[in-house]
Length: 471
Image (cartoon, rainbow, N blue to C red; front, side, top):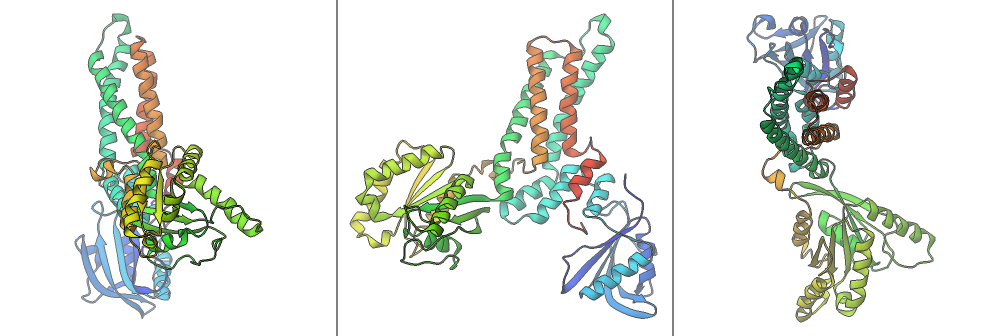
């Protein structure tokens, strides 16, 4: 499955930096490194112990290319399970390329994307879901994404799947054994215990399938559309959330003609805020296009922030109820955060009335919250952030439960759940063991796809092609 050539690649981002790391892996990695590396103490890397560091120089044609630190990892106790040498050199692009070219000239091959991790998988250093978690860890850009990737890379998710698969496999073996003795009409598999296992399998698989909703949010962020009439402070709110002047703010209505987007982390989750054009009737062609895009972004968003002026809540409470009801009817599944802005423009005795009127307006609307704030004064920003977090079910994350973030895993779990459901239905219908065995084999197959116990070259190619070179 894996070619035996020794491979080489830059393991740090390309470009100029303080240092760069060049990684070699394969049967000849140490021998090739010895041809390039001259230790300051005259040592040969092949004669040194694993997991040791050695100072020296990369030398070519009698000329010193760079002073480097050679890190030695002998297989199988290395990342790939093979012999590995890593050169830490100075971060000049010329030096990086020169050392890589010397390695290529001495028998290495340029590594393909993800090939180091692919070799780690093939050599049994990690299973397939752990290998995929390596890519997720590198790409993680929030606390939650990092936490989920680390949990998966440590093998928590894999262990759960492997245990379920093993238990199912044990029963499958007994049912297959019954088929061999079908003429004697004997039962080796305890049907009561098997039914209990299927019930537990179904519950665990359903929990994992359902976790994909939060997992997808963690991995890709949560799009939040900020909508409302012109000049209610949508751009000011975006700037307050980002803590920078990202959007143009003006007293002139209709300033925002197009959507403005930016992303921040709130409570360890990434939220992508979308400032939209104000919704109103207009003859301006450009503004009409912007408003059309506003409705597109509302459809794409997972959460809607509906912004209005606090004074309008007091003056138009009946119209407000109708507006919110219509918005909720159009988007019944989307959480709605109603924000009364410009609270600082109201006298203190009227400010408390705003929240009360908002609560009355949303009393019979599901998945809604009400907040009064002043985006200009950045008062109430924290309450708004907390309101957003309450819409996201992070219970599994807080409890360090397995969370599915990978669409390939989700698809396999969904198929496994379907097969387990068929088995349970077959048990209730008193189907014969040979018919039950067909669905059990399919469930085992789909569970095995997740961890790589069942795989093929095409699947591996698709997975590891998305890795960066050098990992």
